[in-house]
Length: 418
Image (cartoon, rainbow, N blue to C red; front, side):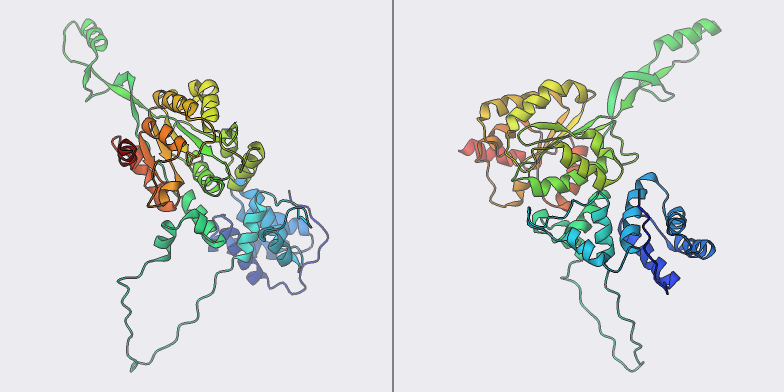
């Protein structure tokens, strides 16, 4: 909730311009706001006036907020935009990296960083068009070998992105969809064009009419599998894990995605269940709760021990109904590979399909030399990269095509040659 302090509003606020810029900041922060809401806000503020700051807040809140998860973002943008002339310096403090322990600022709230980026990220306005005389020669530009900014962003490594590119990548990831193939169940249902005879309904109809007139048919029901993600948050994976958690949050909150349930776990030195945190509709609040829950962030890596904990405590709860498992790790385990080999085999037997996402595949010269990679590789169905937006888009192939193995077979061939 926003605290209403006695801060004076500008003497000459230029109502239409200020409210328009405020609406643009809300739109960049993720709220779906169009020109109609801006016009409604201008009329509402003109009617309500500026007598009380609290009335001003709730007037704009009524015009711009449509869902409960949008309240935090609106409140933070309002506090920053209408606060005082030094709000720019305070936003810069939130976005600038600081040395831990010296003049350390308090951690921003879940929606505060997004609000600061929305207010500071003013796009450059295009210059006004220049009227050309009829005698001027039309200049044509050949764009055959040029590439769009979106295409470049899709193939840029997450570790190589700037702050602005990371923000754009998060928005692109939020729009990604994970396709899912339904599973044919043993249970059946009546169907006009089914392939299975329904003898019970057929005989019941014959007894009722006294004659066998029609053969009733049935078809198999379809059910949707679970999606289970095990994400490595160790030091070597931290940069990619943050982006992949955005990806898992989008999958967990996607309407009509088809997955029965989405379960997510993080592991470094221990296993942490973050499923309930990712169900929060606001991505900043979800990731802040995840960071508070997972205390082993950027620590060591114990893949074998973490998989053992998952197989012992969680596999029977979440891997039923033919679940698809995403194992997100670079495979750099510090312990002996015997336990990892045993637990990976058990995980594969418990799941419908095991897909390994490894950011190290971004290197052309990657080879399965690490002991953890060699222990995991024989027990996965598909081995794919996870270092860019394009690589996450390619994940749909592994989900929709049962025969798609990524580069798993090529890696197995390299292991057999050694």
